[in-house]
Length: 361
Image (cartoon, rainbow, N blue to C red; front, side, top):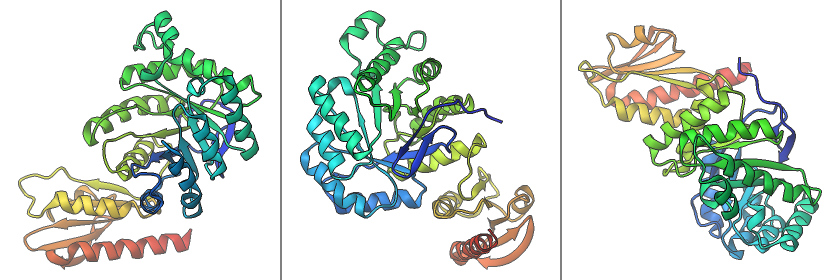
């Protein structure tokens, strides 16, 4: 059983963060934020995949103004990502942002920071202090050097210095992130930061890469930290459709037995007995499972000979053969189906099982 680190609790909209609240899985849109229609469409896709907090880039005033329309059409909290411009931070909150991500030290000085903090207090908006390896102050780099696994001090001191700037204004609704593209630096930095503050922490490996590299790097770094009880929210950063980030994120939580959302997919790696396009079949089933909430075990197997036996712990599964497939439940044959109809019939059976489980809940 993982013992969570004790932190303060803040709220991003209605979502509790820290203080024993469930670890929240976040993502970020890659649409132009001033295109409210496209941004809302993508957020709806993220919501269906389980996203609990969403962040959008606010590079200009048009994007800040679009937040009003975006927030009105979505169900999850909306965070505005701001760089350098205090005016945009204030405008984002005025137009409905329920959280902002800033680096307080690069907003243009104490007066501008004071205006941002005043707006955050007025609108009851928490602030994430976000520090990346590439945005550390020159003085800290001269003192500590570029962050490494052996010495991540510059990252930590930058984050805590920026937190102090907010505290000096009497502001404490804070979450902290210190991101590096290096896995070991990320782990070392968060471990040390967790020992020095009780603010909730947002985890992430920045610029992690595409689907394979990004999944591996993020899962290693975040998996180790989460297993040690460190982390209150996180994002899997991938150079992919952001929906993929949610798929990886929830599977990571499932693997650590921290949280389970929706069904678990069991699928075989294929072999010479496989006579169907198992890769495509498994991918389409997995995408459908992202829209479901019941904690079912679902199997997609390559052959009817060994499939049901190898996946007998699954609540429901399919296996392919020569022009025909089978649907099985708990290892027992339930139904034979022509191969061309296998996927739609199976998805229909999944929906029936989902409805039954939800009715019994």
